[in-house]
Length: 318
Image 1 (cartoon, rainbow, N blue to C red):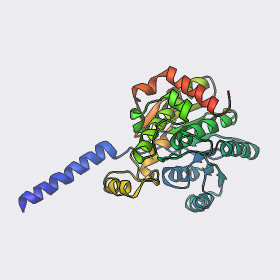
Image 2: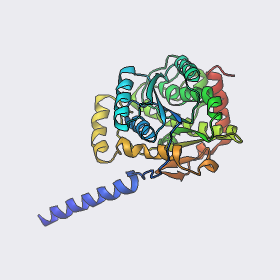
Image 3: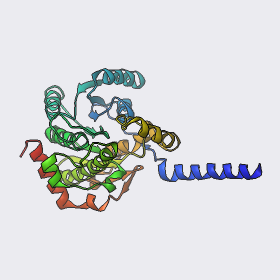
Image 4: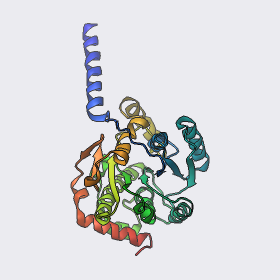
Protein backbone atom coordinates (compact mmCIF):
# COMPACT_ATOMS: atom_id res chain seq x y z
CA UNK A 1 0.00 0.00 0.00
CA UNK A 2 2.82 2.38 0.90
CA UNK A 3 4.50 1.64 -2.45
CA UNK A 4 1.28 2.44 -4.33
CA UNK A 5 0.89 5.63 -2.31
CA UNK A 6 4.47 6.63 -3.09
CA UNK A 7 3.89 6.03 -6.80
CA UNK A 8 0.70 8.11 -6.75
CA UNK A 9 2.44 10.94 -4.91
CA UNK A 10 5.29 10.79 -7.41
CA UNK A 11 2.92 10.91 -10.37
CA UNK A 12 1.03 13.84 -8.85
CA UNK A 13 4.26 15.73 -8.17
CA UNK A 14 5.45 15.12 -11.73
CA UNK A 15 2.12 16.34 -13.10
CA UNK A 16 2.25 19.54 -11.02
CA UNK A 17 5.87 20.15 -12.03
CA UNK A 18 5.17 19.63 -15.74
CA UNK A 19 1.99 21.68 -15.66
CA UNK A 20 3.41 24.70 -13.88
CA UNK A 21 6.81 24.65 -15.63
CA UNK A 22 5.68 23.95 -19.19
CA UNK A 23 1.98 24.71 -19.52
CA UNK A 24 0.81 27.18 -16.89
CA UNK A 25 1.09 30.65 -18.34
CA UNK A 26 1.73 34.02 -16.71
CA UNK A 27 -1.02 36.58 -16.24
CA UNK A 28 -1.26 40.15 -17.50
CA UNK A 29 -1.71 42.34 -14.42
CA UNK A 30 -1.90 45.79 -15.99
CA UNK A 31 -4.73 48.20 -15.22
CA UNK A 32 -4.94 49.88 -18.64
CA UNK A 33 -8.24 51.55 -19.47
CA UNK A 34 -9.60 51.80 -23.01
CA UNK A 35 -12.39 54.34 -22.80
CA UNK A 36 -12.91 55.97 -26.19
CA UNK A 37 -10.81 53.35 -28.00
CA UNK A 38 -11.93 50.76 -30.55
CA UNK A 39 -10.70 47.20 -30.93
CA UNK A 40 -11.34 44.45 -33.49
CA UNK A 41 -10.92 40.83 -32.39
CA UNK A 42 -11.24 38.17 -35.08
CA UNK A 43 -12.66 34.78 -34.16
CA UNK A 44 -14.08 36.20 -30.95
CA UNK A 45 -17.31 34.24 -30.55
CA UNK A 46 -15.54 31.52 -28.55
CA UNK A 47 -12.27 30.53 -26.88
CA UNK A 48 -9.45 32.96 -26.23
CA UNK A 49 -10.91 35.43 -28.72
CA UNK A 50 -14.10 35.77 -26.72
CA UNK A 51 -12.15 36.03 -23.47
CA UNK A 52 -9.93 38.72 -25.01
CA UNK A 53 -12.96 40.67 -26.23
CA UNK A 54 -14.56 40.45 -22.78
CA UNK A 55 -11.47 41.83 -21.07
CA UNK A 56 -11.22 44.72 -23.53
CA UNK A 57 -14.91 45.50 -23.03
CA UNK A 58 -14.45 45.52 -19.25
CA UNK A 59 -11.73 48.12 -19.77
CA UNK A 60 -14.16 50.37 -21.62
CA UNK A 61 -13.26 49.71 -25.26
CA UNK A 62 -15.68 49.63 -28.15
CA UNK A 63 -15.18 46.05 -29.30
CA UNK A 64 -15.97 44.65 -32.73
CA UNK A 65 -16.44 40.88 -32.82
CA UNK A 66 -15.28 39.95 -36.33
CA UNK A 67 -16.70 36.46 -36.86
CA UNK A 68 -18.07 34.12 -39.51
CA UNK A 69 -21.02 32.58 -37.64
CA UNK A 70 -23.65 35.24 -37.00
CA UNK A 71 -25.72 33.24 -34.52
CA UNK A 72 -22.79 32.38 -32.30
CA UNK A 73 -21.28 35.86 -32.59
CA UNK A 74 -24.53 37.55 -31.56
CA UNK A 75 -24.75 35.20 -28.58
CA UNK A 76 -21.19 36.18 -27.65
CA UNK A 77 -22.09 39.87 -27.97
CA UNK A 78 -24.97 39.33 -25.55
CA UNK A 79 -22.72 37.49 -23.07
CA UNK A 80 -19.95 40.09 -23.21
CA UNK A 81 -22.33 43.03 -22.85
CA UNK A 82 -23.95 41.36 -19.84
CA UNK A 83 -20.70 40.40 -18.11
CA UNK A 84 -18.84 43.64 -18.82
CA UNK A 85 -21.69 46.12 -18.47
CA UNK A 86 -20.44 47.68 -21.70
CA UNK A 87 -23.03 48.16 -24.46
CA UNK A 88 -20.35 49.18 -27.01
CA UNK A 89 -19.84 45.60 -28.17
CA UNK A 90 -21.07 44.59 -31.61
CA UNK A 91 -20.76 41.97 -34.31
CA UNK A 92 -19.55 42.48 -37.87
CA UNK A 93 -19.48 39.60 -40.32
CA UNK A 94 -16.04 38.39 -41.37
CA UNK A 95 -15.23 35.10 -43.08
CA UNK A 96 -11.46 34.87 -43.35
CA UNK A 97 -11.85 31.99 -45.82
CA UNK A 98 -13.14 34.53 -48.35
CA UNK A 99 -11.00 37.45 -49.49
CA UNK A 100 -14.15 39.18 -50.70
CA UNK A 101 -15.61 38.89 -47.21
CA UNK A 102 -12.42 40.46 -45.84
CA UNK A 103 -12.79 43.35 -48.28
CA UNK A 104 -16.48 43.75 -47.42
CA UNK A 105 -15.72 43.80 -43.69
CA UNK A 106 -13.01 46.43 -44.12
CA UNK A 107 -15.29 48.57 -46.28
CA UNK A 108 -18.12 48.39 -43.74
CA UNK A 109 -15.80 49.12 -40.84
CA UNK A 110 -14.16 52.11 -42.52
CA UNK A 111 -17.56 53.57 -43.38
CA UNK A 112 -19.03 53.17 -39.90
CA UNK A 113 -16.14 53.39 -37.41
CA UNK A 114 -14.08 56.58 -37.12
CA UNK A 115 -11.09 55.04 -35.32
CA UNK A 116 -9.19 51.82 -34.71
CA UNK A 117 -6.73 51.36 -31.87
CA UNK A 118 -6.31 47.59 -31.63
CA UNK A 119 -6.47 44.95 -34.33
CA UNK A 120 -6.19 41.51 -32.78
CA UNK A 121 -5.81 38.82 -35.43
CA UNK A 122 -6.85 35.94 -33.22
CA UNK A 123 -8.85 33.55 -35.42
CA UNK A 124 -7.19 30.31 -36.40
CA UNK A 125 -7.98 26.73 -37.28
CA UNK A 126 -6.56 23.33 -38.04
CA UNK A 127 -8.45 21.99 -41.03
CA UNK A 128 -8.05 20.49 -44.46
CA UNK A 129 -10.00 21.67 -47.47
CA UNK A 130 -9.96 24.90 -49.47
CA UNK A 131 -11.05 28.48 -48.98
CA UNK A 132 -13.50 30.23 -51.30
CA UNK A 133 -10.51 31.47 -53.31
CA UNK A 134 -8.94 28.02 -53.60
CA UNK A 135 -6.20 28.36 -50.98
CA UNK A 136 -5.40 25.71 -48.42
CA UNK A 137 -7.61 26.39 -45.41
CA UNK A 138 -4.86 26.96 -42.84
CA UNK A 139 -2.88 29.28 -45.13
CA UNK A 140 -5.98 31.15 -46.30
CA UNK A 141 -7.55 31.71 -42.88
CA UNK A 142 -4.60 31.82 -40.49
CA UNK A 143 -2.37 33.99 -42.66
CA UNK A 144 -3.70 35.38 -45.93
CA UNK A 145 -7.09 36.59 -44.68
CA UNK A 146 -5.47 38.37 -41.74
CA UNK A 147 -2.71 39.75 -43.98
CA UNK A 148 -5.28 41.39 -46.27
CA UNK A 149 -7.43 42.58 -43.36
CA UNK A 150 -4.45 44.29 -41.75
CA UNK A 151 -3.40 46.02 -44.96
CA UNK A 152 -6.91 47.31 -45.59
CA UNK A 153 -7.12 48.79 -42.08
CA UNK A 154 -3.59 50.19 -41.76
CA UNK A 155 -4.49 53.77 -42.66
CA UNK A 156 -7.18 53.85 -39.98
CA UNK A 157 -4.74 52.41 -37.45
CA UNK A 158 -2.20 55.11 -38.35
CA UNK A 159 -4.75 57.79 -37.53
CA UNK A 160 -4.86 56.68 -33.88
CA UNK A 161 -2.10 57.36 -31.40
CA UNK A 162 -0.09 54.30 -30.35
CA UNK A 163 -2.27 51.73 -32.10
CA UNK A 164 -1.26 48.07 -32.23
CA UNK A 165 -1.65 44.94 -34.34
CA UNK A 166 -1.48 41.66 -32.43
CA UNK A 167 -1.09 38.39 -34.34
CA UNK A 168 -1.78 35.16 -32.49
CA UNK A 169 0.79 32.63 -33.67
CA UNK A 170 1.92 29.44 -31.89
CA UNK A 171 5.00 27.67 -30.61
CA UNK A 172 4.46 25.21 -33.46
CA UNK A 173 5.82 27.85 -35.85
CA UNK A 174 9.19 26.26 -35.01
CA UNK A 175 8.10 23.18 -36.96
CA UNK A 176 6.99 25.26 -39.92
CA UNK A 177 8.65 25.98 -43.25
CA UNK A 178 7.70 27.67 -46.53
CA UNK A 179 7.71 26.09 -49.97
CA UNK A 180 6.96 28.92 -52.40
CA UNK A 181 6.91 26.58 -55.37
CA UNK A 182 4.14 24.58 -53.72
CA UNK A 183 2.35 27.77 -52.77
CA UNK A 184 2.51 29.07 -56.34
CA UNK A 185 1.36 25.84 -57.94
CA UNK A 186 -1.02 24.38 -55.35
CA UNK A 187 -2.00 27.55 -53.43
CA UNK A 188 -1.19 25.66 -50.25
CA UNK A 189 1.59 25.09 -47.73
CA UNK A 190 1.26 21.30 -47.57
CA UNK A 191 -0.22 18.57 -49.74
CA UNK A 192 -2.64 15.87 -48.63
CA UNK A 193 -6.04 15.87 -46.97
CA UNK A 194 -5.46 13.86 -43.77
CA UNK A 195 -5.61 15.45 -40.34
CA UNK A 196 -1.85 15.10 -40.00
CA UNK A 197 -1.36 17.05 -43.21
CA UNK A 198 -3.64 19.69 -41.70
CA UNK A 199 -1.38 19.85 -38.63
CA UNK A 200 1.62 20.34 -40.92
CA UNK A 201 -0.12 23.16 -42.80
CA UNK A 202 -1.06 24.73 -39.46
CA UNK A 203 2.61 24.81 -38.37
CA UNK A 204 3.56 26.45 -41.67
CA UNK A 205 0.78 29.03 -41.28
CA UNK A 206 1.97 29.92 -37.78
CA UNK A 207 5.44 30.58 -39.20
CA UNK A 208 3.72 32.90 -41.67
CA UNK A 209 2.22 34.80 -38.71
CA UNK A 210 5.69 35.32 -37.25
CA UNK A 211 7.22 36.42 -40.55
CA UNK A 212 4.30 38.72 -41.36
CA UNK A 213 4.69 40.44 -37.98
CA UNK A 214 8.43 40.88 -38.54
CA UNK A 215 8.05 42.45 -41.98
CA UNK A 216 5.04 44.54 -40.90
CA UNK A 217 7.13 46.06 -38.11
CA UNK A 218 9.85 46.99 -40.59
CA UNK A 219 7.32 48.70 -42.86
CA UNK A 220 5.64 50.52 -39.97
CA UNK A 221 8.85 51.98 -38.60
CA UNK A 222 8.39 55.70 -38.00
CA UNK A 223 4.60 55.47 -37.72
CA UNK A 224 2.37 55.36 -34.64
CA UNK A 225 1.54 51.68 -35.21
CA UNK A 226 3.42 48.77 -33.66
CA UNK A 227 2.83 45.04 -33.98
CA UNK A 228 3.54 41.87 -32.03
CA UNK A 229 2.99 38.13 -32.33
CA UNK A 230 2.63 35.53 -29.64
CA UNK A 231 2.19 31.97 -28.49
CA UNK A 232 -0.92 31.91 -26.28
CA UNK A 233 -0.05 28.61 -24.60
CA UNK A 234 -1.51 25.18 -25.15
CA UNK A 235 -5.19 26.00 -24.99
CA UNK A 236 -8.32 23.90 -24.66
CA UNK A 237 -10.43 25.63 -27.34
CA UNK A 238 -12.39 24.71 -30.45
CA UNK A 239 -9.40 25.10 -32.78
CA UNK A 240 -9.47 21.35 -33.40
CA UNK A 241 -13.20 21.18 -34.10
CA UNK A 242 -12.47 19.68 -37.51
CA UNK A 243 -10.61 16.73 -35.98
CA UNK A 244 -11.88 13.26 -36.66
CA UNK A 245 -13.42 11.25 -33.77
CA UNK A 246 -10.21 9.27 -33.18
CA UNK A 247 -8.02 12.37 -32.97
CA UNK A 248 -10.46 14.00 -30.54
CA UNK A 249 -10.49 10.87 -28.38
CA UNK A 250 -6.69 10.76 -28.28
CA UNK A 251 -6.41 14.47 -27.43
CA UNK A 252 -9.10 14.53 -24.74
CA UNK A 253 -6.98 13.19 -21.82
CA UNK A 254 -4.13 15.60 -22.65
CA UNK A 255 -6.47 18.57 -22.92
CA UNK A 256 -8.10 17.82 -19.59
CA UNK A 257 -4.78 17.35 -17.78
CA UNK A 258 -2.54 19.98 -19.31
CA UNK A 259 -4.23 22.49 -21.60
CA UNK A 260 -4.96 26.02 -20.37
CA UNK A 261 -8.46 27.40 -20.24
CA UNK A 262 -9.35 30.33 -22.55
CA UNK A 263 -8.88 32.92 -19.79
CA UNK A 264 -5.30 31.82 -19.18
CA UNK A 265 -4.76 31.56 -22.93
CA UNK A 266 -5.78 35.19 -23.50
CA UNK A 267 -3.19 36.66 -21.13
CA UNK A 268 -0.30 37.09 -23.55
CA UNK A 269 -2.63 38.55 -26.17
CA UNK A 270 -3.73 41.12 -23.60
CA UNK A 271 -0.11 41.76 -22.63
CA UNK A 272 0.85 42.48 -26.25
CA UNK A 273 -2.22 44.68 -26.73
CA UNK A 274 -2.02 46.68 -23.49
CA UNK A 275 1.38 46.54 -21.81
CA UNK A 276 3.06 49.94 -21.65
CA UNK A 277 6.53 50.38 -23.11
CA UNK A 278 6.48 47.59 -25.71
CA UNK A 279 6.96 49.92 -28.67
CA UNK A 280 10.74 49.28 -29.03
CA UNK A 281 9.90 45.56 -29.33
CA UNK A 282 7.63 45.93 -32.34
CA UNK A 283 7.80 42.87 -34.57
CA UNK A 284 8.88 40.55 -31.77
CA UNK A 285 7.41 37.34 -30.38
CA UNK A 286 6.01 36.78 -26.88
CA UNK A 287 4.87 33.90 -24.70
CA UNK A 288 3.74 33.78 -21.05
CA UNK A 289 3.67 37.59 -21.05
CA UNK A 290 7.38 37.80 -21.80
CA UNK A 291 9.64 38.32 -24.80
CA UNK A 292 10.77 35.04 -26.38
CA UNK A 293 13.03 34.10 -29.27
CA UNK A 294 11.50 32.64 -32.42
CA UNK A 295 12.82 29.76 -34.48
CA UNK A 296 15.60 30.38 -37.01
CA UNK A 297 13.26 30.73 -40.00
CA UNK A 298 11.19 33.26 -38.06
CA UNK A 299 14.24 35.55 -37.93
CA UNK A 300 14.88 35.46 -41.69
CA UNK A 301 14.20 38.96 -43.03
CA UNK A 302 14.59 37.90 -46.67
CA UNK A 303 12.03 35.14 -46.15
CA UNK A 304 9.68 37.61 -44.48
CA UNK A 305 9.96 40.05 -47.38
CA UNK A 306 9.34 37.29 -49.93
CA UNK A 307 6.26 36.07 -48.03
CA UNK A 308 4.95 39.65 -48.00
CA UNK A 309 5.46 40.06 -51.75
CA UNK A 310 3.85 36.70 -52.53
CA UNK A 311 0.94 37.42 -50.17
CA UNK A 312 0.30 40.77 -51.86
CA UNK A 313 0.20 39.07 -55.22
CA UNK A 314 -2.14 36.33 -54.03
CA UNK A 315 -4.47 38.99 -52.60
CA UNK A 316 -4.44 40.88 -55.88
CA UNK A 317 -2.69 43.92 -54.39
CA UNK A 318 0.51 43.93 -56.44
